Image 1 (cartoon, each protein chain N blue to C red):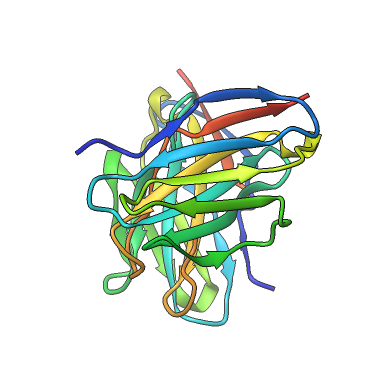
Image 2 (image 1 turned 45 degrees about the vertical axis):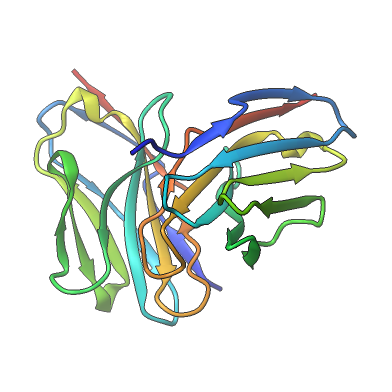
Length: 114
Length: 113
């Protein structure tokens, strides 16, 4: 079955710590990959996306993600988190052929302690 | 450009009632998708409309329906509400049906009592 897995449900970090959130997907075809963020009380916003090309993708606010095709992974990283990064982070996948609605992971709640 | 807008933002209904939610996409975007967000199930795809036609549908019962108007605005309707329909309903738009980013609205929070 098609699925997107985010193994970290809740991550707590101190400011300036490094962040890595895991995302693995299970799809047979070629995919597009996304990370969305939902700040408290705000709507889902796109952090970054991968369609093709360089597997290391840079997004907004210092976030980056690396697509590793052999591992079916698209982990999100940030070298130094800030209190304002406290939010819920969602990994999502669309298929490049056929129906291309977003399939979301269950989300990872990040709490950054000042 | 203005973002995706959704009305109403909050709604309280009782079991058995029906509800209609509205979504206005970003200007120029012709595709509108709807998602349901709950703590237990996360974000799940409901359906997508393009050019007033449903193009794709998720795994939800027939009580969930939608439509799209010629100006690309979309509505979704839930009939015979159940307690489990309490959720945040998100609308997303994109220019077409190709490999494009979807942009989300703030959502409508529905509480069914």
